[in-house]
Image (cartoon, rainbow, N blue to C red; front, side, top):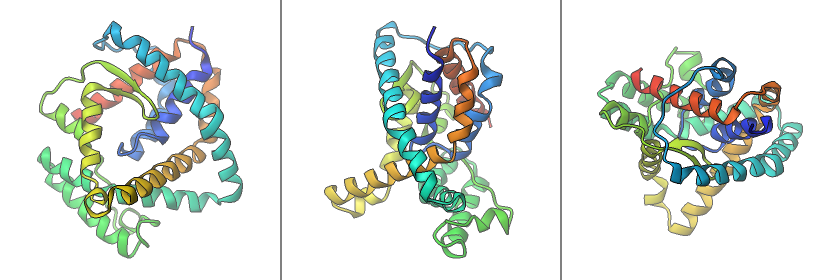
Length: 247
């Protein structure tokens, strides 16, 4: 039986450190986890990857217990909630290009148009995205698309389940999608290698800490579960990804 605390760490890291994944999906992952514990999901399993997955699971656990949670708790004490929510919206606004591109790849032209409209409104009237005026004032909601979903849209199977260091749960398909989404980041084509690495790393860490700080109490509640939590988290992740593709 895997320790109950492991699930919390896996979920937290999947929410906080999976850069490029839709923010609403992160919240739904934590909020809907309890309902998923008894729902089995068939997945291609490669026994050669199990050792790797378990090791990465332990790495992510250590990161959350020793680094992410303590830093996030201190962050909560000095940064008001409204400012942290504003930062969350800011990072969401920065990730517009992959969402626009993947909407177009999937022929979701309205979704692409919504993303362009949201970016223009929130980057101007919304103070670079710190305020979601597109949603609150104009009723324009985000279109959450990534390249992993695009591959699924064209019939590419998920492949083997993976637990990635720092990034949490994934599959072979979604890992490829994550890399492609990262290649759409315009910073790497504008900035030099050193500056791009510094800015990207700072953005990633800031986003991770901010996301973790907004979910402190939610993930504390996960401790009460006593089932096979590794499998439950895996099932929920895979089900959620398939649901996103179908939508």
